[in-house]
Image 1 (spheres, rainbow, N blue to C red):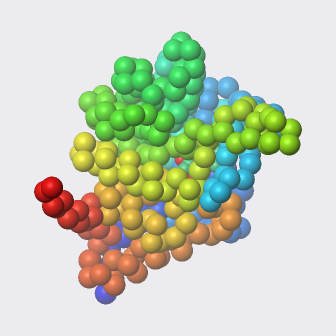
Image 2 (spheres, rainbow, N blue to C red):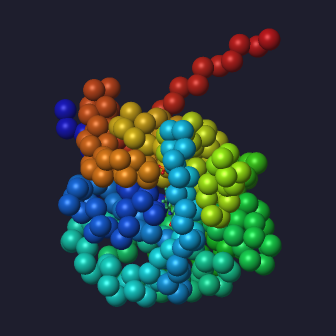
Length: 309
Ligand SMILES: Cc1cc2nc3c(=O)[nH]c(=O)nc-3n(C[C@H](O)[C@H](O)[C@H](O)COP(=O)(O)O)c2cc1C
């Protein structure tokens, strides 16, 4: 049985539900010898700022059990160089989602404006896991009021399909999802890396120069699944599930929990071709279970009623 693999992620038409995650696939060409980007749903480019940015000094990545820590601090070429140099170099047929971040709300809006109407950009993903200078460094995505102002400003700056990528470093992901829905986002991406710390005991120092980093990879997958499921129960926006996906089975778990599409992140470093295999594996799962389309898998998690005590 042939399975219809197409999905609609908040107005972004994808040929299948698998994308590569921001920051783990460069600007699309670096890993091109290993993965044909026209075979996957799309790719989310490294987050862009108004000006080019240098990241933190090394060490800025470290191994962790079943994952990695990073504190790259969003090094990037800047929005104008991306549009001028990086986008035109991508092969035709690649679905590009441009990710953006800044330290102040009006700057976020300006980056969104510069990406709007640019040929080849199918949609925008707002990375809300960045420290907000005016709030003393808490992440935009950690305060509902700040998040609301951010989404409102970016929404009024662009008519492109708009995904908001939520921070997992919150008490209630459902509350943050509702804020995004209320301010006109077209979809949610979740989760970003989980704030973490690792220690070098011999030197009695943090392993990363930045002290704190983001934990990603299979270690965070159950947290991500939980958050996707909670967000799905709180809003009707389409969700792109992210966190520790390493196989088609992992991806299917996200679809069952309510994600319309998924992103593969850290696993690209181990297997740069994984995203295409994962897309094939999802279709094979759907066929094996008698679903005519991948979209039918979304939200099919059966939660048994709990016996009363
Ligand atoms: C080295 C590295 C760089 C990242 N850079 C970004 C970034 O620029 N923007 C962003 O939104 N997320 C960034 N992320 C987070 C990933 O896109 C993803 O949300 C997170 O790693 C969880 O997925 P994973 O467990 O599959 O890696 C980065 C992750 C890693 C490991």
